[in-house]
Image (tube, rainbow, N blue to C red; front, side, top):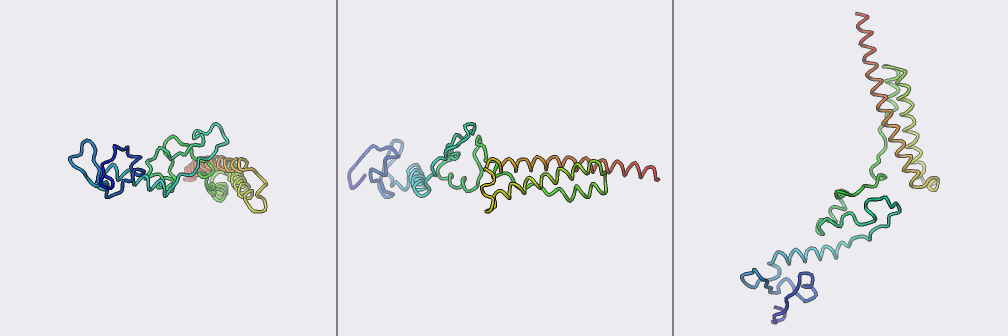
Length: 199
């Protein structure tokens, strides 16, 4: 009922254009009697989503230069219900099936140089030196990626080259951790054998 006249039928998405307001009386099949629009759950849900969509417009889909990118430039949140979409964007959690940008997920590698030096001195020098080498290389590669983002050197490397240095730093870090573990266990075995001979 709009201005005392019976109008319709209307689809949900055309109610706003037809002039239906919260205090407008509506009826559809399955309803016992006429009710205000604000009391009908489907209409309330539709208006909430419409208002949210108007207040939080989706950013335009970014073009993706890499054709292998599984998201193909589409909004990864388009399958998320409208009322949760902005919350999902702010959380940074990606829906299933999307590939995160590795640049955002790569944090600085763990500082392993000090531990490598200590294990070299006190456990097993041969493998300890290998751990020191990889720890140092990890540190240098990460520093190079950070230096390339400084104001004085912003054109030194492309984004892809910076990303390659970050990945390299993490590869070296993994190698360093592996050799740290080997050095520690070899040192423990060596101390156990020396202790056995002494006693």
